[in-house]
Amino acid sequence: MKQLTQRSQAKFLDIIYYFRRYRNIALFSIVGMGLFEIIDLFVPYAIGQILNLLSGQAIDVPLQQLISAVANLSGITVTPTVSLGIIAGLVALVSIGRAPIQPWIGPWFQWDTAFRARRDHAQKALEKILTLPLEYYDENNPGRIAARVAKGLSNHTWSYPEITGSFIPKVFRVIGIFIVIWLIDWRVAILLLVSFFGILAYSLSGLQALATREAKLDKYVEDTDSRTSEIITNIKTVKAFATEASELKRQLTRMDREFTVLDYRIHKGYVTLGMYERTIVQTCTFLVLALTLWATIEGRISLGHFITVLTVSSMAYAEIEPICNLAEVFARRYASMIRFHEFMRLPTGTDAATLQHPEAVPAYQFTGKVELDHVNFGYDADRPVLQNINLLIEPYQTVALVGRSGSGKSTLVKLLFRYFEPSQGCIRIDGQDIRRLDVTGYRKRLAIVHQEVDVFNGTIWDNLMYGNPNATADEVYQACRIAQAEDFIRNLPQGFATVVGERGVRLSGGQRQRLGIARALVMKPDVLVFDEATSSLDYESERAIQLAMRSLFGTCTLIIIAHRLSTVREADKIVVLNQGEIVEVGSHEDLIDHGGIYARLNALQETGELIP
Image (tube, rainbow, N blue to C red; front, top):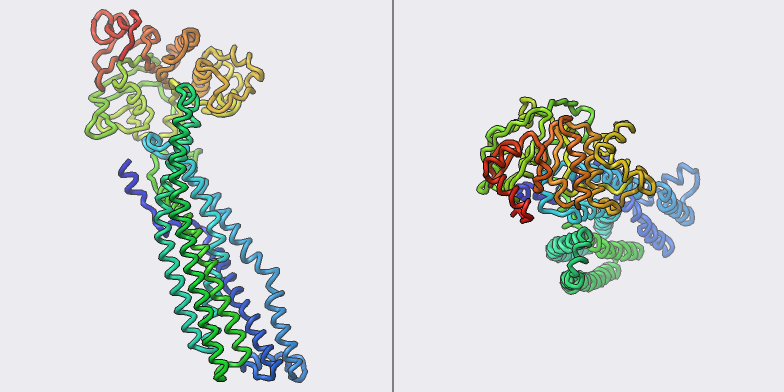
């Protein structure tokens, strides 16, 4: 997992590349909105020129030439009134003419791009969730993963329209303002440029420090949310142990810490930064006023230019706060967006390609012959769990795996399902190394019934059809009969249409177990595994499961992992594991006569003692 983390470092460019599929339309929208911001500067410029006309001063030569060209085309004589009318017409064209166009070039394309990108990356995130190695889920609970994905997608979606619709166009506007003032008085333009970017640099440096705190807080909040998710998942355990008060105290302590950091360090930091920004902006605005007034008094610029410079410089400084606010919002969201990309960079499992092309999955058919050849495995390289496992399971044979807890029984099944790969040796089915088979097609020929059957919040029928949606009704009914599930299902209020609730809470443990067996049988597997399927059930439910398992003997290759040895006495072969090694193999009678570990375990159970 450490290697996964090292390989998943994300960077700022990942946020940019998030929208690269739509870069052409994004570029069109950004440039269009930027040009509208520059065109918008014509209005304060025109007002300054109108003031010059009204006060009897000359207007700028380029504008005078434009007025003359329009007058010549219209066949009218240029007079002050005509000049005023033409300037007013240009203002109307700029302000009214763009009104029906700008919303489509701006908001429409910005949000359309954001929504499309969200759809695309939500699909990719789901693909990532479905294909990550199992060890990732051993270290990260569902609440943490779901929160990271949801928050990352949401912040990308909201940030894009704000950046492309406000931040970048405002930068265009500031550049346009600088050019306008430069053409009027370069001294004022230099003051504006230096002060504007000085304030911006100061603000962004402050935001960078605050963004670092945001990243740490985001990780802390994620841990808090993860614990809340665990409380919800294990609420029965919480109530059974009467730990509500301690859980509440623990979470309230974390929430108080979050509040302290968020309010007194981060939020206060933003407010302090804003205070200095406003003070400096007002100071610079006054300096521009003084410098422009001095230039007007000396006659370097006209009264109209005075009004234009003062107006557009105020517009420029007015953009500092929105730009900084947008940068602040982006800084607050940056950490969660980066964490989303770190999640998306995690290496996937070997079955990732089949998600896009399920029709290309090979349709295997096996006899169920399984061979483990010198298999070694350990979750950590220096701590082996399985050592030199050699085992042959013939087609349609029923094989039981028994042994003390931690002996490697469930790990062996995980290797069979290719959740992990052996560090040495290989596993074959019908003589083929399973690593060379398409993992999805291979797993479709296997089925497993766990100790805790996972049930989805849907109807009984939906859960039964989960592994094989093409199964017929007769096949489903037959599977339910074999699994001893048909009677209890038909006695439910809506029968097969009964909604089982979140994680199957409306069913008893035995009912969920029989439902799991029926669901596995609907798949028509070549190899069926029972992993501690009866260890947590009452006697009546255990008896029903045993009858279901017995009816399956000889129909497919059956592998049974069991603590209760009464479940496996009729197995064709019993394999005893101890400390990751096979120490005994034989029938129940043979192993009892042998007097080894199996005989001792059997004696302990018959006397009512617990197996460690």
